[in-house]
Image 1 (cartoon, one colour):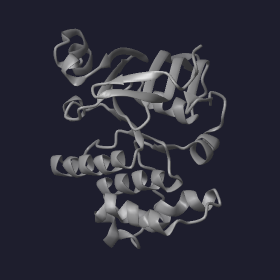
Image 2 (spheres, rainbow, N blue to C red):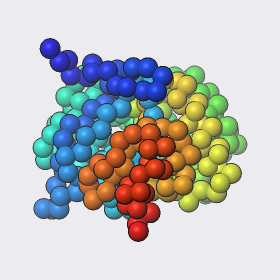
Image 3 (cartoon, one colour):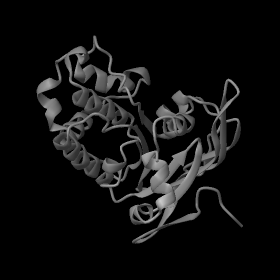
Length: 252
């Protein structure tokens, strides 16, 4: 007998239980077939990379997981439960899926602290004083910015705020869309350190990236998507030796 959500997922150091399973997911938007039979598994405590060029379907995949894009067919199983038809706010507030969009969505008239705490206000969650300490341990750069309005934050600072805000509801899974887009190499290294801290908390992550060179510096199990279809699932070394996949990623 097969139990949904309990299928072992092979990793280089052993086996883990599946946290998220996308099963032949199709998404149609205004008759445009944006996702085609997408199948992705993420283990509990695992981070994976989703690579693809602009328009390949990375953001659409994350939006289908969080529920912004409805699934036309297929299933999304999260922590053993079918969430295919649940609305986004339930997936975020009650099921434990955090989503940081590509454009960060920082509210310009709220302070950094208010932006980070916003999810706790909207869900009537009791504020956990330890939470802000955890966030500032991950992104110590935000300590001096707590009273600054979002309007006056840099692009990198806004991404820090957006990711911190996803942690407010203590998620099991983080969806990070182009978290390192446009960042200088030094800032990218800082973000990699922050992601390691998040991993150490036992939180799973899906990182969608279009920058091939940056993405492959993460030694994560990697999916490659093109034209709404998954064309590769494996380790980084497998991509480097697969000329067909490399050609798709590089666009030539």
